[in-house]
Structure formats: C-alpha cells, structure tokens
Image 1 (cartoon, rainbow, N blue to C red):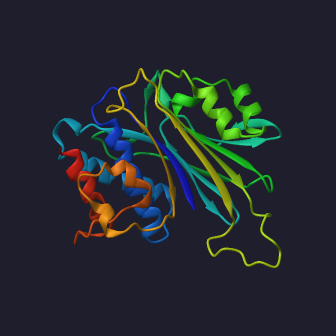
Image 2: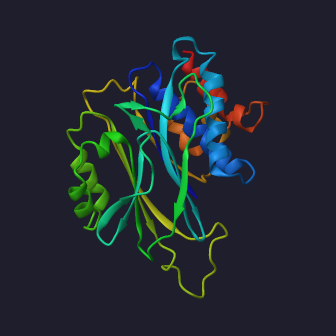
Length: 269
C-alpha cells in the first residue's frame, strides 16, 4: 500500500495538471511495475513528467511537490520532493520524517518543471505500535495550522474532521491525510492479507477561495486500487476524478502511456 499527497507548484501554468499527472505515473510505477527502490521510482516519475510537459507548450514548466509513504510489513518507507510533508505522532508530539526542499523561499526539488535529475528524500521508520498515526500534508496545511493544534486534533475523536476545520481559511489549497496502523486489529486466527499490515486512511482537501484551482490544486492518492470498467476511460472525463483508479482507456501503448492518454487529451483541450 502507498499513500501520497501532491501539490501543483504555483507561479507557473499547469500546477493542477502536474499533480494529477504525477499521481497517475507514481501509482502506475508503484503498483503496476516491478519492485524498485523509491528514489529510482521518483526519478522516473520526474523524467516522464518533464518529457510530457515539454510537448505541451505553455505547460512545459509545470511542476508538483510530492510526499508519501509506502507501507511494508516492517514499517513505513518515506519519500518526498518539495515542501509537502510526512509526520508521525510520537509521545504526543508530531515528528517530521520528510525534508523540506526549500531555500530562501524557493523550492529546490520537485517533479517536472522542465528540469531533470530530481533528488528526492527517501527514508523510513517503524510504527510505534497498533494505532500509530502518520500525517501527510501539503504546505497549504502545514504553513496555516499551528503544530500544537494539529497534535491536539489527531489525538481526539473525529480527527480528520478536526483537521479540516483547522485548515479553514487557509491562504493556499490544503490537503491532509491521516494513516492509522492497524496491524493488531485482525483476529489472531484470521489470515493476514497478502500485502502485509492493515492501515486505515482518512483524507481531506480544502480548496481556498483565494487560489485559482487551475494553477495549483493538491491531490491525494492511495494505491493499490480496483480497476474501473472500460467505460470509465471516456476522454471527456476530468482525469483527476479517475486518477485514484488508474483507469485504462484501451490504448495499445505501454502500461503507463495507456493510462495517461486520457490525461494527454484533457491537457490539450
């Protein structure tokens, strides 16, 4: 299982498309491809986004941040590029396990952006036990909501609803994901799922009224997912709506290109 938040970089055309495209490619490589190291996967995503963006005229510099986790039986693998974050709750305090790629107010790492050779952060940590909480968020959330408020919210009832409430009024779009490790909740006499431990994922996105959603819109994705019916590949459908299902459209291209042909047509409209 993998979970990620992606946030289109503002100030350039195509941030919304960049986050959607990056999520599609990332999900396809993590789930559909062979087992690979995360840093290799992130670099591959960057290369493919740059290659496609280079053929899209004014969107040639579109870019997106990413922060996520890949969940293994022994714990979490963490990856990020940009200022979206991965936190975990430790003894009542939020601990950041990602790295902010930022210098003098400018991002130094991201996916796309008409450049190559992204240098993502890749790390990992073990869960503290059953019920362990991991929080993923875009910078629209982390810059707006005080850490103390987040720590109180995640330990209370209806945590994700409280987090949504804290993000109201943010000056940037905000996405937040709460992942709860549930490895000890399955009865002892019941078989474990083949992919490893169980987790519960709660997601939320708040789109600020002061931000143009066509320029920078955060994306939340989880993999693996069920394949949709062939009808879901209609070219007139916004690919963001089908992004988490990784919809194939019947193209004869390779696995990633086939799934992205719908996005290509949508980007060129």
